[in-house]
Length: 164
Image (cartoon, rainbow, N blue to C red; front, top):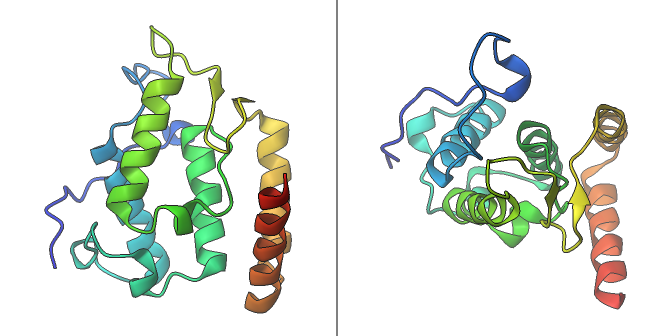
């Protein structure tokens, strides 16, 4: 199915030319959808137009490791701290993009600055470079785990969160 999205992806913040003006505000749901489609297509070896934004990403073969990697990439792009279960909580590209867009809109004060976000249920300062490096190291270590180990880890995290 075709998603009728433009093939050009939004420029990631760390890829922007220093001379480029700052974005007017947080990414829209459409921009987030485009980014997600591009990432999924790249990760899964699909063409962008093969991804239907209304289909669960699991139907394309997204497993827990891919979902965690995608969440980490989203954190880096958006500068947010996101729940590790985000891709399962919002299983389609459309629902995930809409959720993130809404969270960004409600978190951004007038003027477009986003000092805090509330994606994981806790108001969290924007991620600094040191935290990004820690997250990258965590993703590398997660890469070394088996699928079963990752699923067990996620299950333990969800159980602990439900108990809080």
